[in-house]
Length: 111
Length: 114
Image (cartoon, rainbow over all chains, first blue to last red; front, side, top):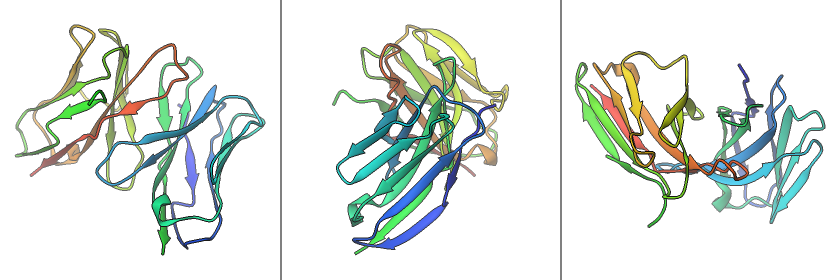
């Protein structure tokens, strides 16, 4: 069974600060996705990373896929209250059929 | 609205009753997933369909749970003889098998078992 761990579990910061959250596994994934979920809603895709070592930027968000495709990080620059939410990573299994989610990092950005 | 829709949004039931949730995926999507999410946790995979075929079921899914997608369009998830531990948000997602695998989620059906 492929499992994903995320850290930290909770993070509370002030507006304008930078932060990094992590997604780790002992398994190799063919691709990894990051989602953000707000209360009462389903998760919404932020990015998909496929190649080991890949870096993708989405405005103030920078995503990196580990060289061995077992881990990933999400860095947010100058966090804003609108970034508040549950950040989930999801790995696509090597058969390309199922997605396993991590437990999430709950981020709170205080104004 | 052409997104994934789920019904009902909220369901309160007594222990031992049966409940059924419906999911209408994005129309051209051939894959449909069911996940369960409890407070403070990530979504937990239950089962998924490609067209009308149920291709995988989680080992965590007890015999009380059954899902169907009879015509490869909408899907239903039924829970029989509900237990308090079934209380959770049930999320449906759809995707295109040929895409980069992006899952489009509905807003979920929240089940409370008293």
